[in-house]
Length: 334
Ligand code: AMP
Ligand code: FES
Ligand code: ZN
Image (spheres, helix red, strand yellow):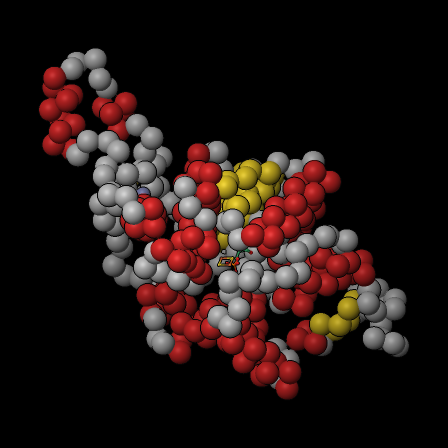
């Protein structure tokens, strides 16, 4: 870094961003990160200063950096931490997230999977028909949406960065999973019972979010989840980093050009119809949602509707004039 000058103020540089062929001093780098996030939010109409934002925070550098940036930019952003029950890793993550929220006076919502739903991720991996990572992803998506709806938020934000998105796109492209490619976008609009989901860090690389967290003095959990070791996503990241080392900008080119030129070609034509899960009320295409089905399998329970099926409901409504339809349906997705 010695001798390099900040692109913005010409002072001594602290961080080099090879992709932009630029270096920044501490303050100007923080400004650069805020600018990239602002561009993402505005360019994709992610949310406004009137929206209530729920940031899903894992305790890692990306999601805590995101929460920090949104608070710095003056957004109304609360945090959501999902306790996955992965031993010391989850315990340390929870501590870090609580510490961050306390230091900023920000609101933090916690959902403990074992307490709320009766299982943790290591158990799920041993008992269910899916891998622990796949149950984990399913459970997180489910809890993000459900908690955000129950607490009246407008949008859910996650800390996925450029490296995450490029690696996912590479994986989806290698297998030509066109339906996944169609949904790989920094903003997914709300549908029946599903809140809008956004990824405001998609313009920033992992190195940039790490440097930001460091320069802002954000304490975060450096260790990776012990269950992901050797996962394919990591190999795709390594492959992209290999290309990036000799051609800086490859990663950004791959993903940002996809958004600009290729994503529209994959846009879904056939809109699927969503309806409330008969067990939990969250949106699904079938009778029961994938989370309730997986949970029943893990717990060895039979999956039964919580509310009576429609035909019985009609009978019940006729039998008692006291019962209003709204009460019978109770607890469904809004
Ligand atoms: P991952 O699926 O671990 O790559 O994480 C992707 C994003 O999901 C992170 O940037 C966070 O926004 C969110 N996330 C991951 N784990 C958790 C968690 N335990 N609680 C809340 N949000 C999480
Ligand atoms: Fe989900 Fe490790 S964080 S399996
Ligand atoms: Zn359900």
